[in-house]
Every structure is written in structure tokens, then in C-alpha cells.
Image (cartoon, rainbow, N blue to C red):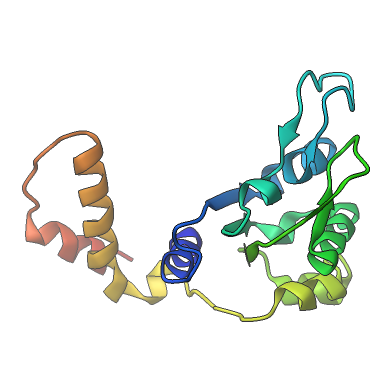
Length: 179
């Protein structure tokens, strides 16, 4: 659901024809965070056999969706905050500053307000990313969305696998009534 909302925001914006890049920041190993997000130059570390563009630069003029931001370790939160404040990155192994023009959308399943209170999520980063807050209730609390979601994914996978299957209307009723 989070990605669908982020993608809808992107598609309805003046950035719709630009890249939409998704990063699950909680799944990034801390040792690769800077290289993945900001890029690196050839030879900047042992396995850097060629220069690489980071996710921020890939999303240039478009949207960068940072999923599971609540799982980002505190030391990496500082680096992300610095980029969001300066609107610029420096690739690993470089001194060149690259200015950014990127919309950043963040999402998490974690109780972010509790993480901020406990100090495991930086308050300054939280306020930097909390420009507009959209609360997306779990699907069990918005069962009226089930038919639309079902049809969306059904059509998407029918096209992908070139299949034409009829749907029994009772299936959607059962899915909507599932507890």
C-alpha cells in the first residue's frame, strides 16, 4: 500500500515523466548505505571497479521513495539528514558536490513517534521528512479497497503472464469478508 500511494503521488505530480526510484533503506547493509544512496567513484574502496551512480542521483528530477525509514540505524540517519538539509551529495571517493533536485517520500511500518521519543530515530530527521503526513490504515481497516486492489493486481499479472481468466465475483466477496 505504501508504495502504491508513493507511486500515485509521483504519477500525479509535475515529476511524473521523471524517474521513480524505490529503496528499502531498512534492508540496506550499513556498510553499503553511502555507496548505494550517494554513489561511488572507481577505486574508492576495494571492490569499486567502476564508478556508480547512487539512488539520489538516479532519481534526479523525479521521486525517491525511501521505504522502512524507521529501520535506518542512527549513524546513517545523520548522513541522510545532511543530504536532505544540503540538497546535495558527494560520492564516496570524490570531493565533487552534486546538487539534487529530488522529491523524497518516506514510509515506515514502525511506530515512528515512539522511536523518536525513545531516541532511536532522530527528531531533527523526523521533522525534516514530516512535511506532509499520510496515514495509511491497514487493509483490514479499509476493506472497501479490496476489490480495487484485487482488480489492479489481477489485471497487472494477467498482462504480464498473458493470461485471460474469469473471476468468480464470490472470490472478491470472500476476500472482503475475510477476518
